[in-house]
Image (cartoon, rainbow, N blue to C red; front, side, top):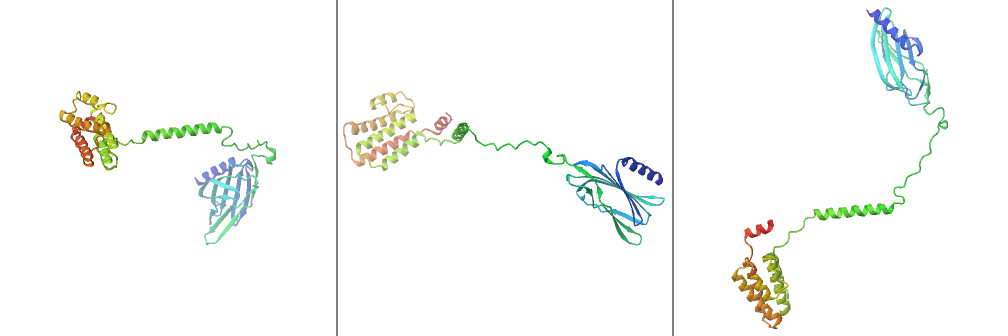
Amino acid sequence: MNYLLTILISISLTSTQSSAETVRIEQDGVVLSVSYDPAKCTVGDLIELQIHAITDGTKQLTLNEGEAFGSFNIVDTQHVLDIPIATGREWNWSMQLDTFDASATEISGITLNWTDQNSDIGSITINPLPIEIKSVAGASLDEMTLRDIKPPIPLFTKSWWSFGVFTGLGLFALFLIAKLLRKKPAPFSAHAQAMLDLQSLREASLDVIPFYTELSNIVRKYLEGRFDIKATGQTTREFLIASKNNPRLEGSDRQALSSFLVSADLVKFARFEPSHDVCDKAITQAEQFVAATVPSTTEQEVEAAA
C-alpha cells in the first residue's frame, strides 16, 4: 500500500513538474529534488515550488521555513508527512511563492536541517534557483506612455460671488432656525405689569403733572390688558361710558375707577396741585384697584389656554 502511494505521489510530481525547472542534490545521505514552475514570469504571478527528499530512514528532516525565500514571499505551504519506502523514508513540501520585485533573479535561502539517530545534526542549503521576473512596465519606464500629471485645481476659481451667496444663505438659514428655536420669555400678566410699573412710579421723583399723567397711563393700559376695554385713546368720559357695557367690570370697581380718573384729570387739565401725601394716596388707590380686579385662578387658566 505504501509503495502504491509512493508511486502515485511520484506520478503527480512528474506530471506537475513536466514544464518545471528541476535541481537535484545528493548530500549527507539525503537525495533532494527541487522543482519550480514557471522559471519565467511577471511580477505578482504565483510560482509553484516542490521539494522532494529521500533519506535512508535514519534521519529526520525539517525545512527551514520563514516568511520568504529571498525576495519571494511564501504565500502558501503544504507538508506531506514522511512516508516509509523500501529504501528509507520520503519527504515532500509544496509551496506557492510570489514577488513584486522585478529585479529579483534567484530564489535563495532554502535550507533543510537533518537529525539522525545518533543525535548528529546537519543542514543542506540549496543553491539559489535562477528565475527571470518581468516587470509590467517593461524593461524601462521610458518605454511606457504616461500621461502628464494634471495641475492642482484651485478650491475657488472665479466663483467667489457664488461662494459668498451660498455662505450668506447658509448663515441666514442658521439665523432663522436659531430664532425659531429660541424660546420667547413668557409675557407678564396685565396685573403683574401694572404692579411693577406702579412700584417704579412710586420710586421716581416726578413733578405733579408728569406723575399723574404717567399714573393715568398705567391704569389705562391695565384696563386694556385686563378687561379688553380701549382706554388709552379715549377721554375719561368716553371710557366710563364704554366700561358700563363690560360685564367683567363690577359696579364698585367702576365707581372707584371713575373717582380716580377724575382726580387725575383735575391735576392734568385744571392745574390742581395736590400734596405729596395725596400723590402717595393716589398710587395706593391704583394698587388697590389692580389688586381687587386680579383675575381668579379659573380666569387665569382660561387666559393661558387661549
